[in-house]
Image 1 (cartoon, rainbow, N blue to C red):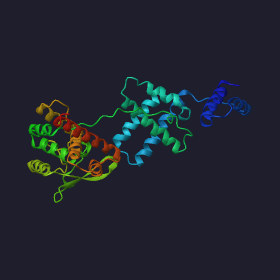
Image 2 (image 1 turned 180 degrees about the horizontal axis):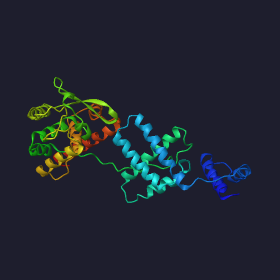
Image 3 (image 1 turned 30 degrees about the vertical axis):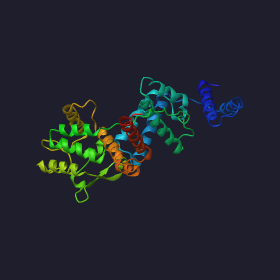
Image 4 (image 1 turned 90 degrees about the vertical axis):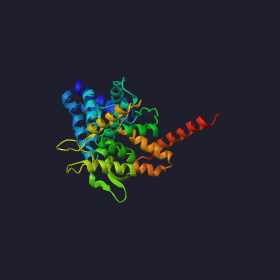
Length: 330
């Protein structure tokens, strides 16, 4: 028997025993040898085998694109999967649970959240191939996601929020802070806002969130006034809500908005990092303190999973306990 035939038998034994664990490998080997001895078998080169994973990655990305995933999410998935492809030089059908664990173990210096993200992408990729009947088994099925330590989201206190407001040096900065605090929108959602999204009569606006889902968010009187001041100060025809201060008055992207927030943080001298996501947490925490219903907060924040919103109720309870302990000596 040639070496290639022996390799094929070994690979077949591995795959079949994984699918049907109780099969008697010795009997199976004898039967396979009886059948395969009538064939001339040559193994593909390692290079050809390795090319199988990139091919499947492209099919997977195309499928997910049709499902409506954002280009940013798709780029992240593709990048993670190509890292795995360079690590595992095998045909997808021969990838084992041990290969998955070995790949994840190579990132032993990384945070658990990073390893969890990599495993989530692999689970989605191999799960899709099983669903599409490209594979019979999922090598990631037995690999569990690492447990993430629960971190309660921390927003600004009312005092810190006032300090931030007072530290804004331009109308654009103040409008940004008020819109972020009033709507609880994500950075990308703020960047994509346009003037024609505003409903002046109802003091609200439409935003496009994750998965291209549209929702309505609301402007406080303070946010509306500051936004109006900023828009009235502009001399451009751009439909973008927030634009550069000089021609050609381009829409502010994510990085430009973050730079504005960094400048406000520096001017405020508050002893913590200020980010658009901190403003989003501030909106959620202070809304919970004011008594908003969880279902309403979930809708306003654009959470598809109610469990994501539920964490803010824990924050609110924690703040209530701290207040009780401050004012009630036991």
